[in-house]
Image 1 (cartoon, one colour):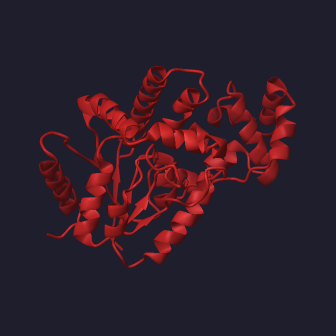
Image 2: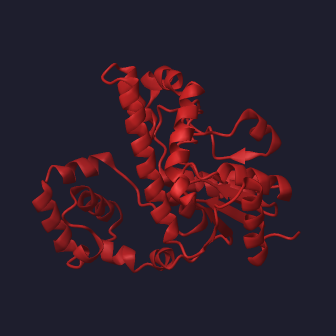
Length: 304
């Protein structure tokens, strides 16, 4: 199975490149977007158009209602099932959520959650929780930021549910493979990054979303957005406009700032991955696509 991945920050044009690659290879697209999994969140997540969906099969979009939580672990299980079903066919993985991408191609492990266990740990207070964690794992501070209450609680929750300390988890073969970027599923990845043009692209894309009816979409969905969905960039900021606590201009400015922050975090995440073949953003989209093809040919994932 030929697996090509197209990654990079939001508003970098990944979807257009993925569509062109998929069309040329006769491939399906597997989305690694943390919010496109939600039904009816269409405009603000830049979901594929009906024409795109008709032209190329897409997977891992419109999976759950916005009221529902959907963890990365659940995404991984469904994504692996999809990749197994597509075995023998070309696949293009595309999106900007680095954790979701790595959950498909790398041996990331997601320990269980238990709200009652977490609640009991939170009730200990931070100092007592740190003392408990260090008691069961004297080296915990090497792997967990002990000043971060959320990370301490999560480490103790995992220990209580699995018996695995942070030190033991970090020494596991899977954790070592993840740190060394050792793939579990063979793939070739290209990265696209607009560089200095990123801010202009983010602003232009968000204004285009507003013109396409994003505020009306958020207004309609507001009563249905669960904890995860309502945190989506763009939706979260416009909810203040919907409830009347801020003007549209302020909501727009906050959404653009949040999108830029997200894009910069995505850029940093993917730049750490030594497997990504970065292509120059310069010149027109056709020239950019030819550079993508050249990178894939060099990696042996494209035959002209």
